Length: 555
Image (cartoon, rainbow, N blue to C red):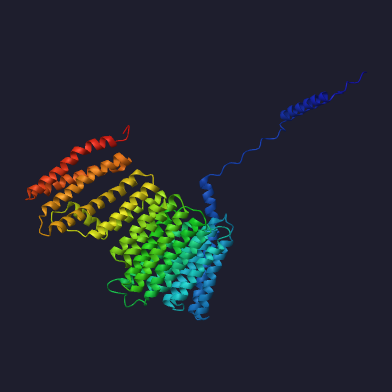
């Protein structure tokens, strides 16, 4: 009998093995021996997951209650004088810190356990310090403030490695709320004022290292409010209440400066060295810190030393803000330059007279334009406006142009302001491409030039013809200045193509018409009226042709 042929090629072997596998699979399927497909895990319902998490928290809640029971045991032992009171209080403080350590050592995934252990620590320490300070008087206010600071910083430190926000937040809340409560109850402001500032400084230091950013608003609000309350208690009309512990002026001034130093240095570090943009919190808090520090310092009285100190703080802070503005771009540049402007205005107004302040603002306006940075050039406008309005120089120029026939003005201040305005205009032309900025400074320069010209002409008229010469010709000279100024503006447009001057022609002619109708027509000297009509009419004749030739092609 011949034997079956064996496959002698690799392909034949593969086909034979595949056929055998198919036969075995059919036999297993027929006998019901095939493996069942693996089932996907059934997703857990959210409600069931929440129930299980809540159920797992029940034993933790039991431990929390045992922890509170332990605190009461320590209190009972202390009340029974089984141990000295200061020893019992010290043991209870260590007991509260122990629960904070347990919270920090809990795995980060066990959030409920971490939160309850932290809460246990807070519930032990807060009432403990209250009783030890208010009822037992074992701890002085300064000692209680120191304990709160140590507890808060310890909570920030032990939660650092695992970034346990709940532990850091609980420790910070405990420190802030307990300090605020003790400040009110003990009527001793200074210890808890400074501990709130110290806690704020600790949180800001952490923020500079990119930790606990969400807690900044809490500690900042507490520090701001504490300094405001202390300032009000000392500076209100009735003075500090008799039941309160004294608050030395030096301590209050130190707290105001500390508030400013904390948030200015923190903001500077985060923007300059960390590369962050100023956020809403930092912008608002820095403004509040400046307002509270400088405004609160000024409320302490007109002491020359305090005024000099506030001036120094304002101007040095303004210089720092401008330095930061040059180092930054975008939002940081805008905010820092705005702070620099406001602080420089405030610093000069505190201790300097208006003429001196106006001179400084004029220099700053020129400096802003000379810097050649577009955003900074715009601050030259409010600087120059402040220099013109505060000492009423702008009002003097306006009286010189629109005043009655017998108006007299001080020439020197107007002439000085005119030189500054003209310098600002030409600096704006050279360093800024913005036509609106050119037009603003052109308006300042034209108005001051017109005021100076009117003052010079009317003064020269009386010098030439005497003080008793008719004042009606002074009105004519002022109207002629406006009409002639409009013609000169049109020539400037025609020759130098300075199109930003065009609106000023309408302004000059509009005020000329006002003078002609309401002032010149009321003069009794008819030759003076004729000259006014002649000057204004001639301007109306020449201006359309000049403006038409000065119009840019295609305009």
